[in-house]
Each structure stands twice: as structure tokens, then as C-alpha cells.
Image (cartoon, rainbow, N blue to C red; front, side, top):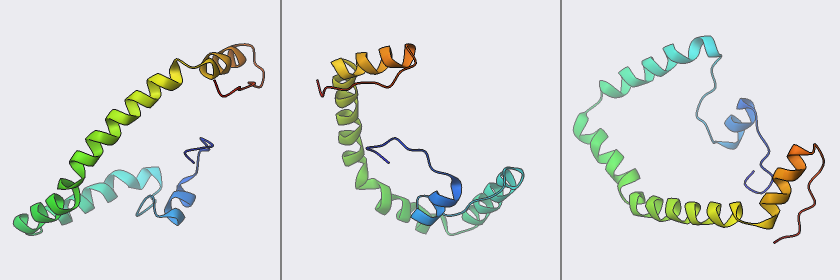
Length: 100
């Protein structure tokens, strides 16, 4: 998905493990509230410890990854391929990327 930019539907996201559950739009808010209430009723010390264990070590890695993403986006935006992609979009034609 990173390389192609293809969109996926909810069922595919569920199958790939990107999401835990899929709900119809009309049921989403109620399902989210139910989950939030279930978490809120759990032991706060344990929940806090779990969050720190899962996300605490990743904060530094996430910050580095986000910095890298910004640098790479700027690099891509300033490329000839970006200009070609924008021109092709405006001219309603398929882009001819050169890797520059």
C-alpha cells in the first residue's frame, strides 16, 4: 500500500489486521463508547503500565520516523516527478515519471 497508494476497504483492513473491528457507520459511535467504558472500568495502574510499555519505547522511534517523513516529503515535493505528476493531473493525462 505504501508503494501503490491503493485504498482498501474496511473488510480488507480487518483481514490484514490493520483494524480490530468493523462496524456499520450507524453503530460505530455506540461501539466506541462501549469499548471506552470497558477500558475505563479496568484497573488504572495496569492500563497506564500497558500504555507505557506499548507506546513509551516507541515515542523516540516515532519522533525519528516523523522527522524522516517530513524530510522525505519535502524531497519528493521538490522533485521533477512531483511537478510532472501535478502537470499530468491538471492536464488530465497519465504522468510520465523519470525518477528525478
